[in-house]
Length: 538
Image 1 (cartoon, helix red, strand yellow):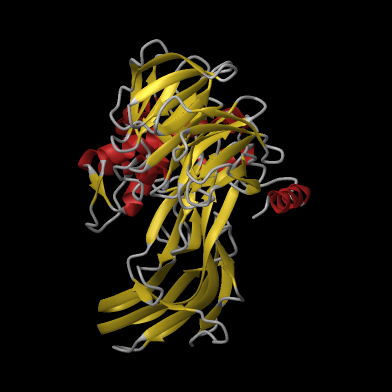
Image 2 (cartoon, rainbow, N blue to C red; image 1 turned 180 degrees about the vertical axis):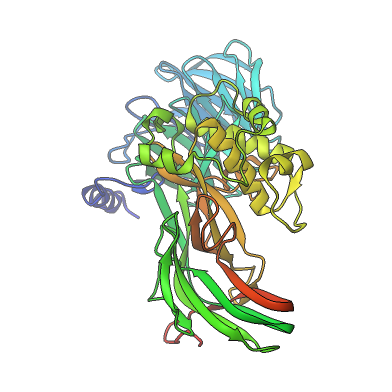
């Protein structure tokens, strides 16, 4: 594409850019000045781009993409660049050397060996350099005197290529995941990941307001939003139909004079959009709302016949999305900023939580320590739960102190313990229940899934899946916080025992008996894809 065409394209993008954008949105783009761009840095006025094919460094005007200067690189395979306010630092992967370059003269003022064998990206934090080595899966802070390692952390994933320093965080590009990760070096945790604009993310740079990313495959410099005015990103829409069937059978010999069935009603959320009203067969007797404001369809049956199937069917068509809450911990308010009505409803004790139990009180002290930021309090609790539990679907929902003492649990028991610790720490927490798409769009689910939500000031309710986050990779742990995949239709939001659902979710029942009875009851969700021009099955 010719330079004039690119300029018109960029100006049009800027003119029509929204007043706000989700973090990671492409605000504009520029053609890279070379065919093999790697490192990227911003010196306060110009973008510097390293090219491994020509061993050159290009100074680019970020307003129009014009190359202002060209310098010889201080190495033969420059991968990373960082600007320290006066000089440009370069990391050479061929010689495993880090060099300090005076861009005014083109003279290398200092050079020392990289502390890792396969260095990639560089960043400057105001005092020291940060280096990422994707092959060794290491991020390290190093001295600018001789490259001595000061502190090191594991990378978010296994394909990290570039770094940029921003507000006490590191942005990390990962070419295998096609992600840009926000990494907190103080806590050693990935805060969140967002999709990279291209398929081979390399250099990163920021001016504090936006993030630039140069893509090695596209040969494009992308200018990305860091604005979180709208913090939820939706992607990967999937249109599906759900048939949820509840079945009850009485094998006698006694009678069942009455049966009441309650089915939770899903509604629109950031991760799901219903394509029409939820349908039931038979028609509900009425609709009720529990103490947590959860709406439910209620079905009443009398004198249930012996050995016959009594069924309730719910049908719902929806578009399911991968929804990601992109949360900056430094923008999360204090516990004192949580609304009174939220505290009063979601800090109370419940039978499954038992937040005053000595086991819970001791655990929350160990987990939270002296942390006061609600986000990092939550992350410490999340870490504590996954370090003290292993997943085991053994049946039953035990109380939180017993689950912690036992050391294993189901998704519900992970959730009960997590909520208990959050409430004991002063963080409002509740749970959601869902029907799950198991692998294929045409599939069934009879085990379902439950996870938690926490209330973070300035962001509201945020999804946290403590059992889903019981993983090894930092990126996978972070994906369990503030994310709902497009494989879940949420039906239930609850803070504790419900007068209709009890501690269940999706559905529950009540029945009476006259004489001895043998009861069978179960529910299963059947999924099918919705295709253009086809009506949902009935």
